[in-house]
Structures are given as structure tokens and as C-alpha cells.
Length: 302
Ligand SMILES: NCc1[nH]cc(CCC(=O)O)c1CC(=O)O
Image (cartoon, rainbow, N blue to C red):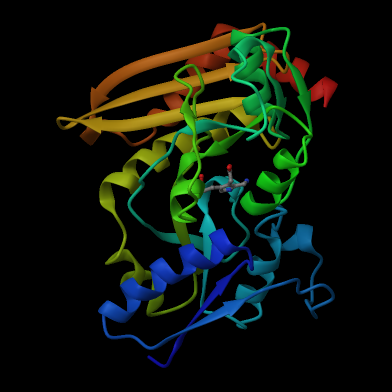
């Protein structure tokens, strides 16, 4: 095989993740090239995006580059990858998960305020709803952009604190103070780097399989199946965490209304050889226990 072209978004975090994948492939003896994809805009595709099954805003440009053969593989944060993958694109490997939880980062100038009086910057429906479940009076403001941009906005004073994935902070080697927030529950597949390739590629899927981390693969399969079964194509405050403990899997799942007042939670332990369809089974239980009505209410108000 010639040089493997590794497509990535251009943010510092995305590039770091692409380099992780690159070094694994180089260890196997492959030549590699990192190809940052800014925006493929009006690339000549012979079908519209929806006909190709392309939906994710963070992953769209990499999907197009893959289908156009501008790159051989695409490296993503798995939590940004829609559960419905485009036609002819598959997730072929995941790297070992490291720090999946959300943490609180405060504005440097902010006094040491109690959690319940913090004004929080986040654009995540999940983080907002889960925080409101605990502290219903909290005020929020939107914040977007990559980790560095968000830290800058926080220091400009838009809020007292923000919530980040700890994986993002660790990977950027940022020298930041952060606080663990035990009542939060991470997004499905948070903290996991994924590698996508085309279904019809003859060599890559098996090469990628060999660098995939099996335990992480099992956990994210369950989490993403849970998400896919619940959401039915709409975004909602959904958290999921599957974790292997002594050959068993513990699964925590949560679906909340947007204001955090109404939540359905699940906490299950099961044998890991039964993991197939487990996420779907648990999600169906949540749907039967009021989740269906909750999802309808969320869809109406978005
Ligand atoms: N949507 C943003 C995003 N996508 C992946 C990460 C960090 C890496 C990860 O958690 O997988 C982040 C930043 C954040 O949530 O704070």
C-alpha cells in the first residue's frame, strides 16, 4: 500500500488526534500523510448530501473528502460522529479511551463561587440539562469554537465557568485547574478517537482493525446503540457510560427533559459476552418507562 492519507479537521485537538493515529500506522510500517481538511465546499459530488446519507456538521467535510478519495481515512472524535453513518463509510477502529468525563473550568478572575450560583457557558443541551437537574436556577450562555477559543471567551468574562471534556484538556496539555463534577454524565462515546474508512476499500478495514482497542470498541458500541435507539434522528440531553469492571460491564444511561426536571436513568451490570444489542434493549426500556413521551416533548420544543 502507498502512503495512507489521514484526513482531519484543522483544530489543535483534531490534529493531535490525527497524529496519534499516524504513529500507530507508522509502527505497523506504513507511510502516512496528514491532510487537514478546511472545507470542501463546492466539491463535485454527483449526488446531494442527503442522498449520500451525510448529516454531521463536524464530520461532513471529512465524509466528502473520503468519498472523493482525497483521503484514505478520516480521524474523528467519535462523539461528534452521527449514529447514522453515510452510505459507504464505516468506523473501522477506535483508540483506547482515556478521560471520558466532563469537568468544570472556572474563569481565572472569578471568585470561588458555590456551584449553584455559577453562570455557565455551554452550548450543549446535555450539559445544560444535567446541570439544571442538580441546580435548577442556573443561568447559561452559549459558547462555541474549539477548546482554545472557548477558554479565551471565558477569560473575556462571558461566564464564571464552562464545562469541557477532560480528554480535550489532557490532549492539549493545557495547564488548567479543573473540578470533577460527579453528577454529570458524559456524552455517548466521549473521549474516544475513531477512524473512518470506505466500506469498499479492500485493505484498510483489516489494517485498521489491528490497531483498534477491543474493550473501548465494545463500550462505545453499547453507548451508541443506546443513543441511536433513543434519539431517532433528533438531538436530546442523553448521557451514556459503559465501563468494563472485572469482566463485567456497568452501564449508566440518562435521558432528561431540556430543563432537567424530568429524567429517566438506568444503571445495569451485565456479562460482557452479552453486549450485542444491549444498548438497544436498555434504550427500549427507557422509552417504555416514559422516555417516549419525553423524546416527543423535546422534539416539539427544539
Ligand atoms: N463537540 C466538541 C468536542 N468533541 C470532542 C471533544 C473532546 C474530545 C472528546 O471528548 O472526545 C470536544 C470538546 C468538548 O466536548 O469539550
